[in-house]
Image 1 (cartoon, one colour):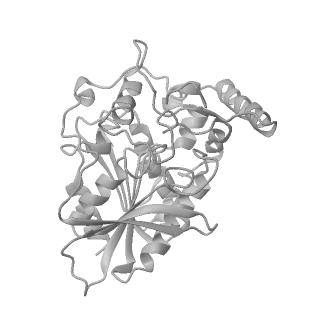
Image 2 (cartoon, one colour):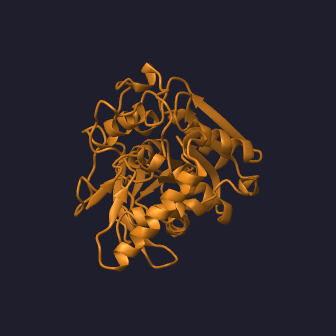
Length: 347
């Protein structure tokens, strides 16, 4: 295995100056990625998508729920390059405490879900996995098929939008710390990447395909940095603190810790053709909620989605929060806002 670049800043994707405030970099705020609730029952599940790929997930149900009433349900998607144990399980648990049936899942090619080679980028199959989760929930006797919502964290924010555009069974759509990996891969953060740099990415991925066709080893790119140096940006440090420390590190069975979060170089340019915000207005009149930290380096994506979406829509700012803060910082994540949104729109 070889990492090209070795961090999310690799390949020119994140080259903006350090803009996060000291408050956003503060490592307090009650981080608890591996939160568990005595009031919620968790069950490991699997289901298949339309392409007969097996998706692994977790089903969360409040222990004292009323079995005589069909319940609303929410699907929760993990950050890009992560797995369900990172952020998604936390959100699913907290929403289950408030009376929702929830499902977290590993996207295909990641975690315990099928798909080879591991770490492949495939936005279409990611979106399909969320529709497959709707299929699964709709077969559960305790779930009301007409009251299924979805929440995407980081990269999954754009994947759930992509799914919602073609699956009207998703009745309410929320995102937290959203990334649009299509814009990021084409243009970099805040337009920091030139067309020539984009072409260099495509050329590198294209050459890597020849290498793999000829029997060479896969290369990996982007993802969270594996180490921090004096030259590391605040964004690198932010991701490192979550993915490479006990705060949020999780290595799926059979994987290498050095492989987690890093997509394959030859597939990463698939994001060049990913345009989740095109036709986002067609999701209306289903409601959309975009949540971002006001200090997040990713805030441009939530702002962009909100600008293009049609009503009903809301952009909710979390004061003092950076991007990764909303992965697991219990004192900053607006669980009450999310609960109110889904209670209102899945009533």
